[in-house]
Image: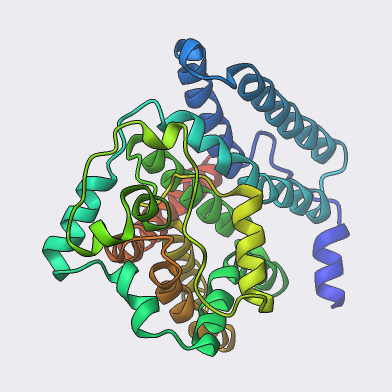
Length: 328
């Protein structure tokens, strides 16, 4: 504990002069999407609020940098990281405004699902395994997404302090890579596509192109499981608060979870890894069980999470190597 407090409150002798790597990721995404909003503002109903929101994020980022420069210590570094991590949930609904500029692709992904499995796993899984206890466990896995991220980043802060900034860069980079994919691949997922088409037609393999239907309709299927159960209610609340017909492929739940498990393993936090593994398995299965994703979305999430971990860790190590050379 004394070492942790020393890390957090000792004034740094060689503070970072510029923005952190993860802050550059945020600003790069901010500028790129701001350019899209500026060009396409006539087709974006909320263009003005999107621009203002981005200016606020930029101002917050620069203000936190200023606070750190005045008081360069571990605590102000952690505050900078925590704010950007918290803002990830703010960025998510914003994706819907951008990806509806492109044609919906659910009919293609549902067709590939049908060709690969001969059925729609997201339709059948909760019907075949309809036990309420199992449903509640699936909901537990699904809602463990953000708590898992908080636990992993906190564990790194407490026991692998020197790697904290790097891990935050990997986490934030993974989110924004998925956000970019969601913008260019407008897939809503089964919970929106199935009721729009009709469950009976879906079961018969009828998978039509709905064009811009989801621009104007956001009705979704009810979450299966123990209605009124704690975790079932949390899933419903999360969907009501921020879910949109967007961001199905690849599953960011699976992608981010995969990346987090690789981070824990890489930094030899073995006990934490084995504690989180059952939740990770439940989370993977739950994405299909509650119909948030097609099975191919979940499988793609395993790949995207692994690729994000490998590439972002390598990029972070490369940037740190260059920074050390400059100091010399």
